[in-house]
Picture 1: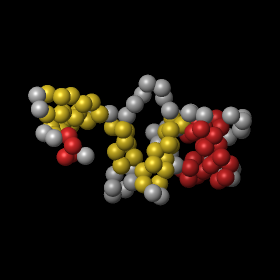
Picture 2 (picture 1 turned 90 degrees about the vertical axis):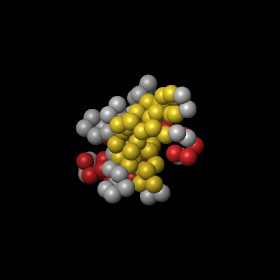
Picture 3 (picture 1 turned 180 degrees about the vertical axis):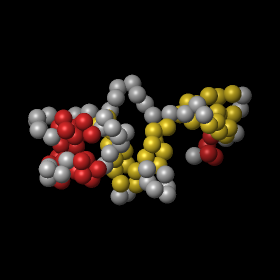
Picture 4 (picture 1 turned 90 degrees about the horizontal axis):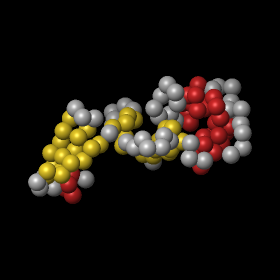
Length: 115
């Protein structure tokens, strides 16, 4: 990946936020052209430094790609906020238990009907 003066500045934005859009990063770094931010984000994504999360047809956000750190994402349908959720699946008798962040538990008799 070609070195850019903005690469480290872009990555530093992820120190204070879990997910960011290109627009969020551009607001934090107004001295950079939007196309420069876009190009650098795409290079970081292609290099595997960032992960792309497609929220919907109009919204894409990025997060740091941390090896060994897997999680899913919850998207609020009211405000569009994206948050990490850690799912743990257990099978008990004929039930599948989904533990969400250890605090909420859903019991689903038939997993195929749930999704």
